[in-house]
Length: 436
Ligand SMILES: Cc1ncc(COP(=O)(O)O)c(C=O)c1O
Image (cartoon, rainbow, N blue to C red):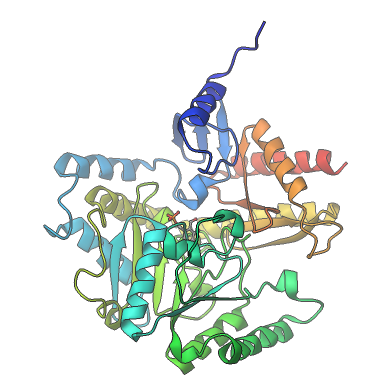
């Protein structure tokens, strides 16, 4: 007698037959409905969602005002192309973002559809503004999967045999204090890393040929590594000194995730350009390149854009999402959720030597698994085992890190304390079993 497949298993079998293997799959969860911080799967199970569609639903699954705005816009028109006929929701969203996230003076915004597209366009704008070609990025960075974005992405496993990559891209070490601190104080470490930038200017690329530096202040896929504040401030000075534009990639860190609209608010540094996506649209594809108006205006007509830039339905979703985030004070929720996770993760770290680091900013919280608390000995196996054990108990948790040894939490920020603690209890109990 053969075992009957569950509906979820049936769907995964169909996926395997119809969808290429190259499309990533963290686990075998399925979805038929979602609301708040839970997903209902094909078999009617309620899953606690600690992944939030990879940081897309900070305001929760299907916030009612967002669903309503989508329905209303869909009934009016779906598409005309912003290049052909200007429509109000696009302009209103740009105005809203410019007011919410000013870049140190008059600010302008280009809307596109995905994070990678925002990154591609930010680089094009920086190159046109500076008339330079060089781009500096960081180890463990993730900026997407299109050609320029993939070139900027550090993790080799994300791009096997995908070259040749885009030229004129240079990479330097991300200031990962946990991994490379080597017993120094943060101030000593920051000084050494900033000194390394000076050296790079002599042995790798003339800073006068760099159009821009692109950095995630809290690396997302790279494992929620937070750049030291002193480093970010020093980087800003170095860029100013050499006429290099500074781009912050806020695609994963924006819209309440760190307890603020932007992660850059925590650093006292303003970028020249920035990229946004994910939680801006509560799940509809919408992304933005923002920047100082003079820089944004240096792109030649028709050199940036595309047929689907800023779909009217996505714009309506984004406007309603921002209104809703203001109404529920998403940033306070980010701080609250982050503090609760940090407390529980610290408790787990005190108990288990396999947890080398607990870190993050606001609710962008993670723990890194290593062998015997050694930052240079990543332990991906324990991390994967934990993720799979949680999945068996209907908790969706995803990993991160170039070495796949980080558990990160990107739960909707509207999650109730009860559900959050239920999820954290599952992590704690499963960790207990794995480490026993
Ligand atoms: C920091 C960052 N930049 C860019 C991207 C690419 O965004 P998308 O997947 O929408 O192309 C991501 C996606 O995870 C991201 O986290």
